[in-house]
Each structure stands twice: as structure tokens, then as C-alpha cells.
Length: 322
Image (cartoon, rainbow, N blue to C red; front, side, top):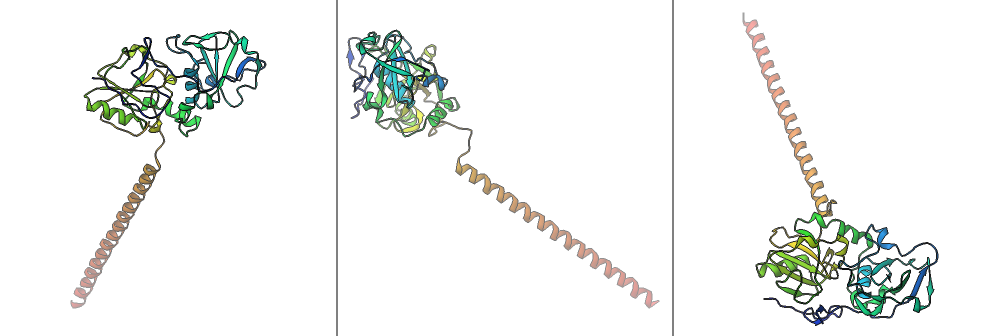
């Protein structure tokens, strides 16, 4: 039986509620900054600078709206979210608007393909949102993490033996990609979700939008997404990824190995200290063995010399007697 537990946060509405045949969507919490067009060099190229797909498009190409774009840009700590052609999303840093000039808002006249209540730019102009205020209920859960640290986490996902990939989730009611247990926690981590799903004897877990945990017995691997689509840090552990908007981070709940974050090639400070102490101990033992060996050799040599001296003295005494 599926069940849900909602938290006090405001980003996610009740996950069981539907609007028409779609799960309830998020909405921007501020008006856009305006309509902008390229004037000089393209400075809304933040995603391409991270070697991610640019522009970002939703996997079904019929869901893009301001909230989806804002969340994706916020997850990678960009300042601006830009929408164009009704379905394209791009991201910019603090200098993201330097190459653009503002146009009259009427130029941004294309409705968002995922929600016709909002405008998503025009053919060659962008509707710009400031990420910090565009979806404030999401941003207050953005972890205190640098872009480089976030990229390191995403890059190292495959090093976790439990990780099985990033897949798309269905936006349609009663057709979610993992349809076993569903639970939402404000302190969600990979380990918390594994525990929840193991209690229900499920083998597969999926984490979405930072706090949602889905359980299932199997999943459709043909719905794989680019790993950058699973972009939201887990609310309970910023060094882990818990899916993204309508994107699921899939893990094997049967895997016995439970870690507290992604693996890394770099050794921890504790491991380094342990290695150093181990080397010191080995050197100390080798030194003791060396000293003992020298002492034993000296002892044997002294014994041999004493025996030789005694033998020589005996021979001398024996000769004097005759």
C-alpha cells in the first residue's frame, strides 16, 4: 500500500494531489525580472560551462515552466534562470546578464509549454528570473556547498556501489515510475530512504527533489536521463544527490554497503593518520628487530671469542706442562 507523509515545507504540495491528470506543479514566488535579448557575448551559458546540456529541456518536452527551470538552475547555484521558445531553460552566474539588454515585455510572448499561465520568452528573447527570489521555498533548502563540491558529488555518483542511475519520473497521477511506498522527509538521505524501503521489503529506492523517497521492486532502465538531471542535494546530507524535479536517483536497497555520501579517490584525514601511525609502528618494530639481531650477533661473537681464548689458554697451559 502506498502512503505519504508531508512535511511543513512549502516547495512541494501534497504529492498525492492532482490537477487534472497531472501531479501538482510548483509555481514561482516572484515576478520575472523582465524580457532580455542578446546584445553582445552570450553570458547565459552557465550549463555549457559545466559541460551539461545547454539549453536544459525537460525529458518529455512538454513540461517546461518557470519553476522547473528555476529549480534546475538553483540546484547548480546559478543566479539567473532564463526561459526561451516556450520550452528551453538556460542558467547564468552573477555576470549572466552582462551580454544582454532588456526589451519590452511584449517581446516575450510565448506561453510555457508546461503551464500556459506563464510566459517563457520568445523565439530569440528570454524571460529572466532571479533564482534567489524566483522560488524561495526551494532555495531555503539549497545546501551550503560550492559549485565545485556539487560537481564533485555528481561526478562521483557511479563510485557508490548502490547507485543505479538517474531516470525520469512520470508527471501523471497514479503513473509514477516507482509505484510502491512513497514517503517525504525533511531530513532525507540515501540511507533513510533505504531504511524505509527495506522495512517494506522493497529492493529498489528512488529519491526525488531532495526529500521524496519512492520504493519499488523494479524500474524501467530505458527511461535513463543525463546524470545532471538528478541535481537536487539531499536535505539531510548535502554530499548526496536525491534526484531532481521529476527525476529519480535510483539505488539498490538490497546492497549491504551503507555509506554516508559518495565515494572519493581522496583518503580521509583519519585514514591518512592511520596509515602514518601504521608506518611508524612498522619502522619501530623493524628497528627493534634490527637492534635485537645486532645484539644477538655481538653475543654470539663474544661467546665465540671467549671460547677461542679459552681454547688457546688451554693449549698454552698444556704445552707448558710438557
